[in-house]
Image (cartoon, rainbow, N blue to C red; front, top):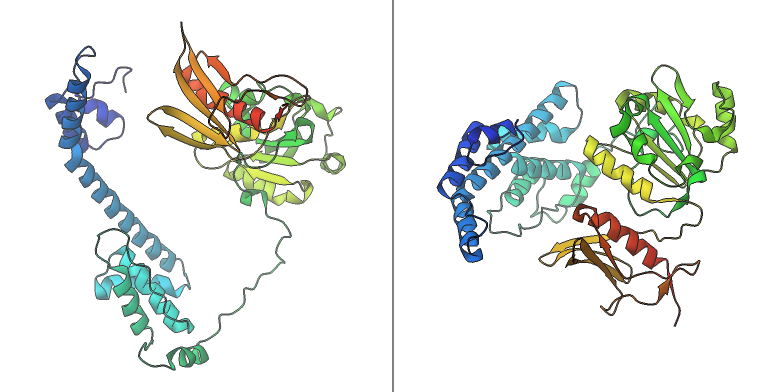
Length: 412
């Protein structure tokens, strides 16, 4: 992969993960309809883009069909693996039966299995809803066929009663140990911007050793840029030794498990975040009883980029001494006029470039006018229009503005 990218070069597309036949088709469209010079008329440049998009439309449709075929094949393979592993779910066998006997594809096979299961369980037939598009309805007929094959007789008024009486009740779930009274750390949800802000001294961060080793590109580097983070409690998770102190806020850091357990019990935590890989998750699950209960308990998951985005949500909820801001989910939209976000009665918008340089951001109230006259709880006047230097920071700056305004007071 090179630093320069030439869209007319199929090799550049293949270096970025495109299959060869896709790469050559995309490069061919750029060769036939290259970008016009930047000083060409706008109408001509837009027309050139439309010509290239029109040429690539069959390729995009082919990619969609290929992706759909891969999805169906992967789903059938998953069901086959579950049966090979001894799955007792009757719907798995019904899905493969629908494929082999009725030649159904994945969506129809799942609908067939649902109908078959409903008939066996003594339920009323509830076929899938009609498709919203003009695509042919394959699920409802498959459901009805499965319902009939499972013993359902829709024309018989006593059908449901007969099948309900004959249905074999499922056995209750048996387990060797009682269910935990709270979810294990591996089952905690991902961080969002919905929970309320929390003072840093009431926050507990559990970091896996693999994340600590990330150095300047890791979560610790992001944490150290936040004001007040020193008051948070940090614990490291080692696969071999378990939990150990990491932050200086713990004073004379307890070195053994009993002392650490006592230290955590004495703390008043309202927000806990876990960042760990699979092996570290298994270790912390085994020591879950050591962790305190808190109002918000979350963990990062999925790809590294998603974990960083989730951690930014958690960072933004940290409140340093003197901070005053509102919580809640910001609804973002990106229209032709630019990025905008809304929280409560306030809307932050991108207002275009500033002179001589920079980018303007403005906050409007419910009337659509500039949000003038608002002050923080400490009396500081808020400015409804600001200028930032880097446009890529607009989303973060707009979020800060919205949270300040949503927690502000207006003095008439």
